[in-house]
Image 1 (spheres, rainbow, N blue to C red):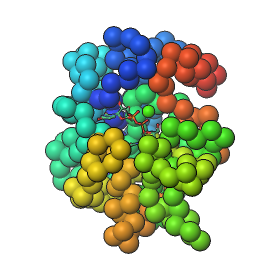
Image 2: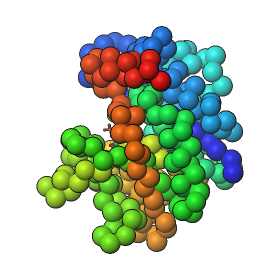
Image 3: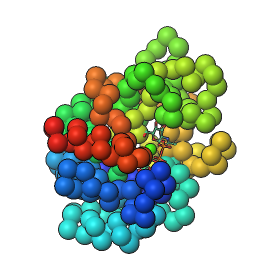
Image 4: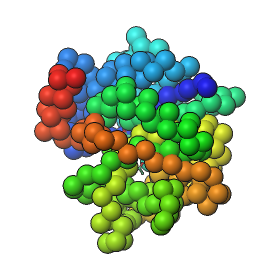
Length: 244
Ligand code: UD1
Ligand code: CA
């Protein structure tokens, strides 16, 4: 099966309190985005598409020696909108699409391979990598269809009810999709939500309502899922990257 990887890196990252694009901050001697690209390359994909937007020229320049195709997202209207920008570069591609974020460099190759294997074994159209964590605040919550292991939808913190906020299973922001399902479902999502953005996570609800198989694979190692939003998290990530 052919594999394309889309890395989302167009967002602003205001909490780093710095003029440098978030994904160009360094940990363990490399920019965050380089860590994510190197990990992507280890999976031997057919293609890697990098979504750039905020400070696009700086990010493009920093990755110029890597075998990635950059797609511009301008303006930045959410993660779903980010992935829509990869459609032209993937025209005619009928394989699987793995989605990563440029600010989340801690996933191991093993975890990503396990996610892809699970997606294939379950015959899912969409699979999300999840984790149970003690403080799920800020993350999207995985809402499973009661009595099944199927994912009914993913609800963002800002849109969640109190009951949904109590769910400990969170969205890591890493997914595998069948390419056709992904791009056709993205045409059905709207900005009718608390942040008025196109949420990539809404593709799960779209697929579920169509009766497609929607799966979730829970990693036994929640440390990997932490994205980097603050200088403190950058230091923490550096420690983990140096250990790995
Ligand atoms: C996202 C997920 C959330 C999940 C979390 C995991 C959505 C709607 N929510 O939330 O469920 O728990 O990740 O970390 O997807 N980006 C773009 N263009 C945009 C917006 C974002 O390229 O217009 C990029 C960012 O640069 C970043 C990634 O997408 O690399 C994730 O965006 P971010 O704003 O951090 O999403 P969260 O709100 O954390
Ligand atoms: Ca984030």
